[in-house]
Image (cartoon, rainbow, N blue to C red; front, side):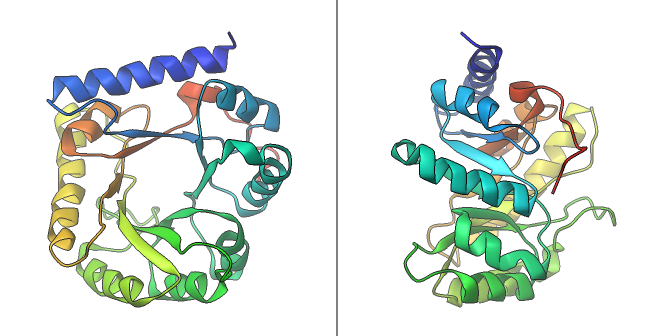
Length: 236
């Protein structure tokens, strides 16, 4: 068994423990393996361990990986999520290749993704990224703008609004982590009353997984705990 397989088993165990601890049903939280900067071989090892959903942050690198696995491992039916900041001049590549986009934070990005999504593909599943911490260094819309953006996305035929995503401030205190995640969960609850099919909260990484699960996360984004430290020297 490879170390990546062992790591995935350990992360899944951690997720299940967190689910039980807060009274949630097991397998209610999906593991998204963040494979950015990692080679094809590492992803193949994760697939052997049963992992099907992968997250990429860099457009060119992600598009190349999606194309490779569609050509060489089409039978795996992998699910590809773009989770990084998205510039308007790169929306076409993402719209043509990915299944999900977690980082929609403004109307221009949503409109371009819709217009550039090929008609031969299913509507692109999107999450609105919310900057719950208000940090200028982080992408994401603010809470006041979420409802207008949700209204736009729900009207676009080639997009499906699935929920919200956030990257809160990096703090180690559990209660502070929980408060930030509860803020996003409450916002999702408000949106649920207006839009059908809003079932996804993408929040929680290696350092705050337990708090995210307690607050209602349905998808945690785990990278280093699965694949080890990242090499950013060749990021695209």
